[in-house]
Image (tube, rainbow, N blue to C red; front, side):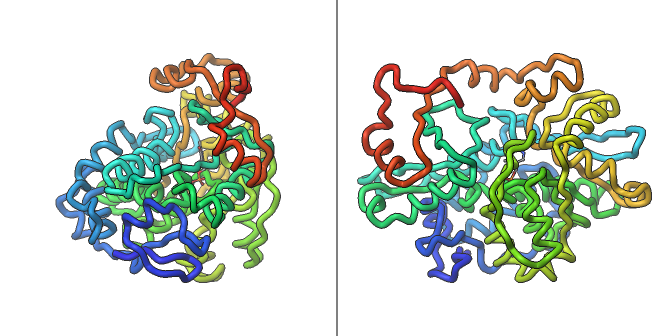
Length: 408
Ligand SMILES: *Cc1c(COP(=O)(O)O)cnc(C)c1O
């Protein structure tokens, strides 16, 4: 299997794509050609580990990691990913719960997989690998650079650093954002497993609603559909950052400034993975037939957290609420005729300040997350430009006693 840049540069191996994170020409790696599966390929695969092995095998062809795939999968999928059946007033649906990992959000799956891969690669260790991650800040428990700007500023800075010739003579960068193909591949496994499980049970291909920001999780689902897994409709639920929906409507890709919303991990005005989507799905025309996008306002997020809590009997996070809201407002017929899976991306207790006042109930943090949040926060504020980043990086983050800001 080869990985090619969305901007047309040279093809590389999986190992090179994982270690580099981003292509030299600034593009993102996509697998070429994308494998195709039939249902028969999964005949003997029932558990998520078995499905993951069948699915990921072709992507590891020619990789030095291929003999370790089984181990990498069990390290990654080490916590439950339940597909919970919900029978509520507005219909019968399933919720794919992706938040039972150590930081209580779905990114645990991609991040664990990437770490399991990188730790097994025989890299040239003469220059240590520095991994850059742009984050909206809700997941930081380690030393972080608090970029004084939006998530888009932060993401642009990471890409600029990775492409900067001067910095790259002294550092070897990789990325743990969903620009790294190692984040994307494992995310296909839970969609493959869930769609196969539903298809086997009901004989109907399930349809999914995915809370979407940078479009990594949504792209993983689209890849599954393209590879032949039994996936019917795909709906991307966004917050008020509606560039994806606007593109599907107008056919024109117009990245925008990101807006702050209650579903803050989805506050993205220029979703990185759109570049992959455009490379893989050619044009808005063919994409339009595959996927819908619905934007959900903060007011509707709040409403859904309240109503969802009453209906489901449990609280949902603001990101998950965008998807639940979309489900609730489908036509009665569409809700009834299709087999819906709503994707839950984070544990509600991660966003207790938003959720608790709406439900009036106290949320309990999962233990692993509690342990992480109890650790002190170390953050160094920097301006959103390359010079500030370089200074922080090369002067040991300026982390002298007392220099850490007390915020995330
Ligand atoms: C990152 C994140 C999303 C958005 O996922 P993308 O892959 O960026 O589209 C949704 N919900 C939560 C809780 C997240 O952390």
